[in-house]
Amino acid sequence: MTEAQTLLAIENFMKRVIKPNYYWRDFEEDFDELLHDADAIYNPRYQYASLVQAYFDLLLKRMRDREYRLFENRQEFKDYQLRTEKLHKKFIYGFQRNNKRNHDNLEEYFLDLVERHRKLLLVRVDLHYATDLCPSVKQFDRDIEKLVKRIQDKDTIFKGQVGYAYRLEQGGKSRGYHCHLLVIYNGSKHCKDSHFAGEIGTLWQDRITSGDGAYYICNTAKNKREYQLAGRLGIGMIERGDASAEYNALMAIGYLASPEKDNQYLRGKLSGKREFGKGQNDRDEDR
Image (cartoon, rainbow, N blue to C red; front, side, top):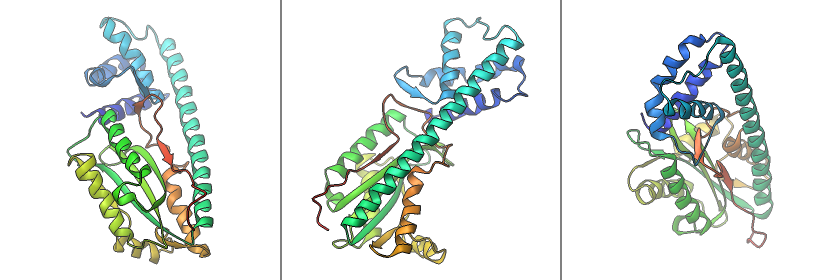
């Protein structure tokens, strides 16, 4: 298994463990099924989601002494279940609360851009890796750092950007790491949103990930036509004063920090690294 798949497998196992009907005598055998894959990816410098960390805490004891019994009796296991479930609920609550704060900040950020620009061009691209590849979270972090630096430096395709936001996640069909990216351009100077999206995707695929990357463009004509028919087109050109377009845009960009998305967080990341980021408004920008 890849690192991302192993982390998800560990978490899914621990979700079973904390259920009241889990039979405690099965734990050690089930635990050991993931032991070698888990040991291969464990990094003490990583910050793990609560259930994954709970597994690794026991792994360290198990690896020091393979004869070590994790639980002596049913009550000891039940106490562990309750503690672990409580920590998981606390983790999810904190994650949702953080998402809500990010969502509110992102909305304020966008509305401020609307006030300062008559037109905004919203470009959405989802960045991931080829289906047969899944790099480590360390490599994912390096790739994202390269991308964000280019955006902040307004390098090449980002020259006309006036704002950006991104969300790092793990999950989906590939169970791998991916990034939901929003780049906002001055709509009075730029209009080819699908072109920008394609160039961003190509940059990610060819230059940043050296061919390992893949991408999905939200701004295709087909996608926008479907959004339009559904009455929720919120990407592409957004004009100030068009209340419907502004509302749809808020809904579209809000996806990057939706409090309801509580199952695609990074199960492991470098300590101190953020899963959400956005630009800072420049008050001197030309309207």
